[in-house]
Image (cartoon, rainbow, N blue to C red; front, top):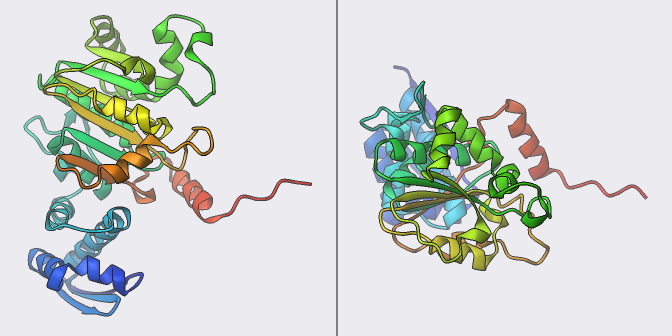
Length: 320
């Protein structure tokens, strides 16, 4: 195995101090685990060692920098988790007795380091918030986790919840029964379900209330036990709605909230409940907050380029 050297330039000295840890604690953890030589000079890290190990170290630092930008700090547990995922491969966080998220025909596995952190967070926590761009797998993996737990008998029900605000329409004005009214808003969740289960089984589970679709407004006053409760498009909740939803958790249940805070459809000046929750709950024990970014987009390659364009290009002025 050939040796390699890589110089990683950080944003500034402040980032370096937080990334290295108290008295370079995190650097020592990475050095010992990956068997690389790390030399820190100001805002630059020089990584020396076997080419494969250097590449792993670079990925570890990339993930830690992302977590640092989102949380403002790192813990030894963050470092250990990221190293375990990078060393064991993107699917490592999803290894279990059943070999992954079984959907009857194939296993659904995380495809990026960020997705692996997300899957591990869902496995290890009863409340997980995931923020990321479209195409990063946040909804799909949440449904996969729920179906896996349902099949293993760890939960008895699956509740799919979504705020119905995208079209600016009230449910009462839409045709059909409750399922028909909320179906357009829950389509992405149905698509994921039908990818993992036979349509007839999905229909049967819904008829028996094993799988339930619930508009967010109808969650008030309910408590769900032994269930996985998924709130999709969480960025379109208000602060009070998010508080109401998070307190629906009953005994033996898991809650997973997903959303893209760059695509909020709330009225102007209304604070997103998801944005508020990621700040308010950041230091609450037992809650996982995972941030995905454009590197985790697994749709058509053009999707990542579109995200890039919208992130870095200012909107054009309207024609006079």
